[in-house]
Image 1 (tube, rainbow, N blue to C red):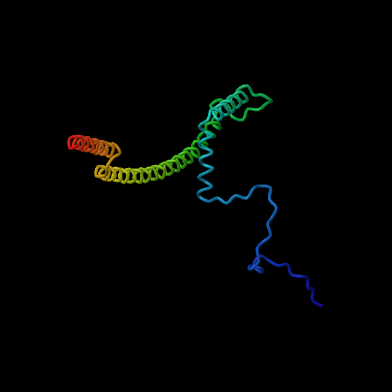
Image 2: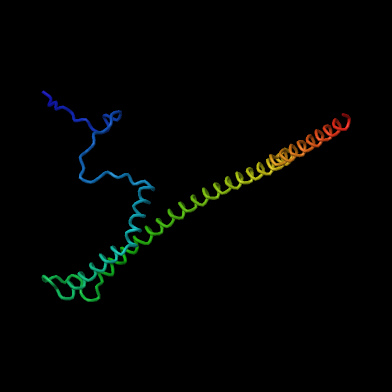
Length: 177
C-alpha cells in the first residue's frame, strides 16, 4: 500500500490564479522612483527644520553625558566619541544624496513651471496683439462712420438752412402781396 498524502499545491502549480494576500504588520510600499523621491523630499524638508536641530542637539547632549559621566554604568563610547562620529558620518553619507535628489526634483518642477509660464506668456502676448489689431481696425472703421456729434451738427445745420429758407419764403410772400 502506498502512502498517498494529499499533495500541497506549490506556487508554481497555480500560476493562473492570484496569490492570497499575506497578513503583514508593515505597510506594503512599492518603491518606485517617484515614491523614493517623495520620501527623500520629506526627509530633506525635515532635516532643514529647527525641530530636527533641536532633536539632534538633545541626542548629542544625552549621548555625551551618558558616556562621560557613565550614567547607569554605561560607557560604550569613551571620550573621542568614535561611535558618535561614525553615526554622524553614516547620517551624512545618506543625507547628502537624499538632499541632492530632493533638489533635483525641485529643479525639475521649477523647470516645468517656467515652461508653462513661458507658454502662457506667449499666449497672452498673441491674444494682446490680436486685440490690439482688432481695436485698431475698429477705430479705422469708426472714423469712416458718422458719429453722434457729427450727425447732430449736420442735422442742426440742415435745420438752420430750412429755417432760413422758410424765412426767405415768408419775406418773398410778404413782398408779393
